[in-house]
Length: 142
Image (cartoon, rainbow, N blue to C red; front, side, top):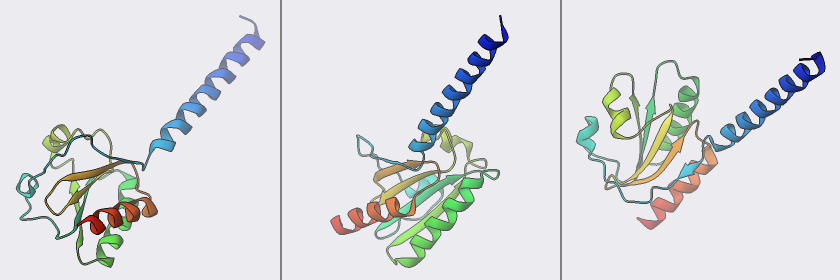
């Protein structure tokens, strides 16, 4: 193979990797709404009850840097509203939960209503404004 063909192949691979990375990154922090209502019992996570409005359930791992940022954002949102709570679960201490809830990355955040119904799921670092909009829609409907 001549040097120009090698250089063109490498450039093509770099371009493809860049596009794939941008597509992956664009999907991070997006809210997905489950197609079916799934109730999660607080006891399955070692909790007594859910918040009276919304529970922000975060699944993290110790070496995850976006988990720390997500924790700060969700904790601040919960502190600003009495009916919202934030629970952070270290998935490395409870690996069975990764299988139970199909968690493939950390952070993963579930937004649960007061009955424990999974209303939304966020894979990756959360976007504050997106979470606020989802909180508002759940709390207004309650």
